Amino acid sequence: HLNHALEAAGMKVVETDLGEYIIQLVNEPPSHIVAPVIHKRLEDIAQIFHDKLDMPHTLDPSEMTAAARSRLREEFFGAQMGVSGCNFAIAETGTVCIVTNEGNGRMVTSLPRVYVAVMGIEKVVPTVEDAILQLQALCRSATGQQFSVYCSMTSGPRTPEQPDGPEQFHVVLMDNGRLRMMERGYGEALLCVRCGACLNICPVYQEIGGHAYGSTYNGPIGAVISPALAPRMEDFKELPHASTLCGACRDVCPVKIDLPRLLVDLRADLVKQDANPQMEEWAIRGYVKAMSSRQLYETSGKLASLSTNVMANLSGGNIKFLPPPLNGWTEHRDFPPFARKSFRDWWRERQKLRHRDA
Image 1 (tube, rainbow, N blue to C red):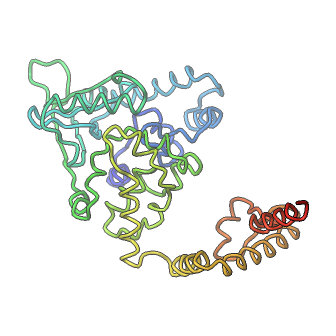
Image 2 (image 1 turned 180 degrees about the horizontal axis):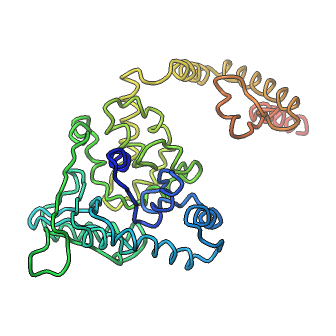
Image 3 (image 1 turned 30 degrees about the horizontal axis):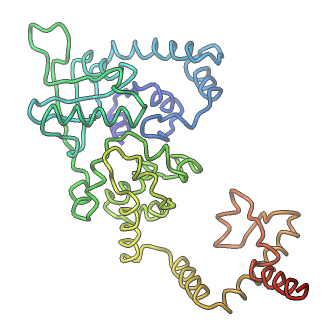
């Protein structure tokens, strides 16, 4: 992470987006692309401000925002270098565009003596018209706005006659696995404008949150980008399976990235690399065999019903513990027992009663 590298070099690093600033105070990663502190309650943030900023305890968002603004303003005026990402970079004018709703981007790009923009190579668009089109799509899908409050555009260092702006302006274009990602066949995901719409609609993300992905990128787009960008796809082999493939992410995506297809392709590639656990392969083979035989299917169902109901009775309700490898489920939630009577058995009994009454 860039912050860690700068801190290791002896520099003081301060996040200026309010959400990023809050989670930096408690040394946590972001949980959402647009709303990095969405996993915190108002009470949690109030406690953080009380502990880290010596702010009197309050649940008034306006007071907390004002306190953070005052503290960050001091950092802005004392900073020697501002570093930002980039929403889009315009090739024909050499312009870097940053979209914010807080004004922190404007401060970062204009107040420090040195400004550095760090971006992936996919952020470059040909013309101003292309940038405006994508900016509109980004704002509408991210926050429902027609346009963001601030769109800061920087095309170079300030000239002698200009009163403000950086004396030095540096642009860092990163590959960092992006060309490899395209070679693997996942370049479509690089069209992402980071609006977060797929996270907002995803049923899996809504249940497990952003931190469960264990990556800078989370949600459906993160489940594609993280393994596709990594030198070893198997380092993120679980993420392509963190999806129901319902297709909602594809439907809301403003640039129409076919995320379900990419997730299926990743699953197939991981299987080809033998990246999936042996136990999982055995389980799938057993499932296929059971589903291919009616007799085996019914026998398996009866055994599952008998065993889970015995375990549930011992637990006094739902099952509190399952043996490995199923214990991963019961570490976080109870497991309900199978129905005592299968639908097939119930139907047979019902048919017998109907024939008898007839």
